[in-house]
Image 1 (cartoon, rainbow over the protein chains, first blue to last red):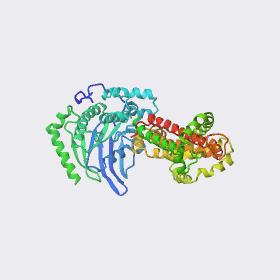
Image 2: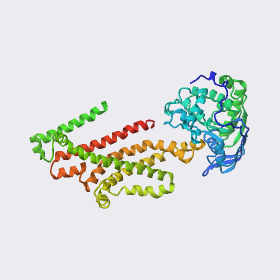
Image 3: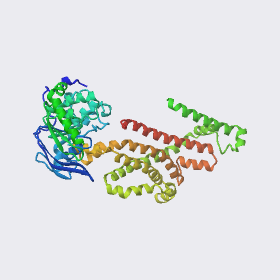
Image 4: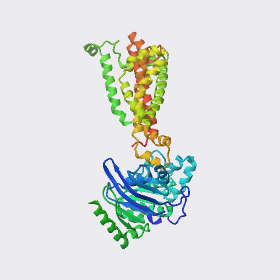
Length: 272
Length: 251
């Protein structure tokens, strides 16, 4: 793994798909339930174009469900989701790229073919789709691993390939569900720094779900704290220094620790 | 190689005991074994060598039946599994019948198949395909249905159509299961071929067994059985090799 200090922020931005204008995401009166079990209640929030909005909450508060509803993979029981001007699930699915908690790489495909699944699905020939993905491999510190089968990649690399696959979907909105939950603490810290650089370059509206307050405050402009199930917004905390490098300095600054304590207090209050 | 040492040793011991029992008159008499009914392994070896042309000619006939019947079952079984996978209605309507159909003894309907399809290769193919169809279909369907449910959803967010999900995710995921089914089918295919030939044939290893049995050439019967087993083993081994190549990633 590449060390975090040489995160590729200075490199020129390489467009990873079609040109996108940043899109807003608005959620109004959203509620959802699985059978009798209410998981989300009366959610209202809006993410401005190119904003990075984080969600933290206790386990089982419906964070993942929220992203699935926004992506249009399921329809909410009540409420409205707007991605730009799109409200219908199929339209939202066309505008949102969703990175699930597990990397879900196809183990039999080489890394580069995993990354370029979206262009392939849209009918791009394999050679062309690979050519599209190749520059991103370099930028994401994956050079030399293009032909490696997904089953043989390390955890951190798998997450990077999964993120690359999400970027190459070429959607205006990124939905990231606990992208680093499965990683060990060191890899996780490195990946956060890496993702900070990648998000800064991409400038896409991004919704990030995590149970890690520090991760959310470091990566996002603004963090919404959700209550225990049924999840609703109980606090909003602005990040003092989103995506600043190096990460260690950013997360140990006084402003950051104060924000973290505020968010943690709200989180503990809401978990009761 | 080491893992073959122990089973090889057991086999040699068993064959040795058999050889002794059949050859050593004191033991043979004590056990009431008639040499012409129970040939010694060395007699079977003799028959394998001296009847090699006969065995080879008949084995070739059986090989053709087995390969063709197996191929029919593989294509039909996989196709049927796809239909059941893609249509809930079809699965609900047909899967219970598929399972129930397995209680029909194919051996018992073999003579009817001969009446319907004549004495040529037709009924043999039908019987082999029938016994191979079930393991292939059921395993392929299990494979298609056991795909991680998050994978198709992930593909949907990557703009995949239903066909692309099937081609890029579901079929590759099902491949190891399909090959497991094919390996079971390979073993039973040879049994199917013998039953097919017993129901009416003038060539093939099953036919050879019947004729040799009538002439009390038990060594030849055993030699033919040996070739049949070898045939099933080769088929099984070939599929295991393919499995190792295409399903190496299996968790």
